[in-house]
Amino acid sequence: MTELKDVAKLNGYTMKQLAENAGIKYTTLASMAKTDVSQWKDDAVLSISEVLDMTVVDFKNVMTGSMMSPFIKWVGGKRQLLPELIKRLPKTGFNRYYEPFVGGGALLLRLAPQRAVINDFNPELTNAWHAVKTDLTALSELLVEHQENDSKEYYLDIRGLDRVNRFVELSSTERAARFIYMNKAGYNGLWRVNSHGQNNVPYGAHQKLNLVTDSLVNVSNYLNRADVEIRNGDYRISVVDADTGDFVYFDPPYIPVTQTASFTGYTQDGFGLVQQEQLRDLALELASRGVNVMLSNADVPLIKDLYSDKRFKVHHVTANRFVNSMASGRGKVGEVIITTY
Ligand SMILES: C[S@@+](CC[C@H](N)C(=O)[O-])C[C@H]1O[C@@H](n2cnc3c(N)ncnc32)[C@H](O)[C@@H]1O
Image (cartoon, rainbow, N blue to C red):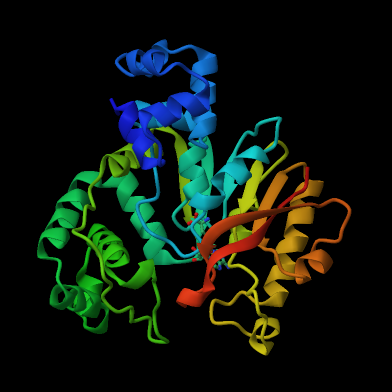
């Protein structure tokens, strides 16, 4: 069981401050903290969750140690935006949850839906999700080996595996361990390959690695307990079987804040203006099939034109996140959450 004072501290509160902000007497909070969260009154759980900016479900998960968070750092990770996304989920609930650009899957892991389809076109990434689901014991052993050996030289050696024939000899679990290790030891959680498919991300500054966490085990248990299908391919194909009552959350590569000529033509990640338009059209097509769609993107002027159709609702929100890899690009930027319901 997690200690309330630790959860409070992680969120920048002492127990006294938490009690004050939640409108609970400090002595009451202190004695509650000695008991299991399941025994606390609902209104107390609600006000504590609100102060900590968590949903009640998340707060209870944190307190019972069953919290899940992404096992990789991923550019465009949605952790900061989660409260805003959660507020705007369809009120009617949903049958199947689809996340066609899953990345680290921050929203999936927060909601832990019973039936889900996740997809990404990065094969190393979906292979890692697969290994977490199907081969956790072997994966964990390999991760421990990587973290014990971690150094710049070791990283470069592991990185270089895709430049020699040894790569094809790796098992899928070995490839997954390499991916997760490199994601945590490499610069800023980037995953970048050159035109030959060879990774070229430099070693990054980091603290001692801790790759096998309780959260990783929880994620693995969840992927097995629930009906979660992992697909690898283009986002459009991954939603062909989405049907009435299902919910799709699209978190595509964002429209750049400053659009250059390359955005309207060809972009490195293959996601330019044409692709943004195709995604918009697909959202409308899904909506006409009775699927509820939520999308996120950068709050740039182009959004207004792109999503001018009356069937879209555009919500403007702000979140702390990386805009690009330059320090000057960090900070609060506007984002939009678009829904078809
Ligand atoms: C903004 S990130 C998603 C971040 C994710 N929501 C999270 O919380 O980590 C976009 C993802 O889309 C994937 N992607 C890019 N183009 C794609 C395509 N055409 N089809 C499927 N996935 C694609 C990228 O590999 C990347 O993982």
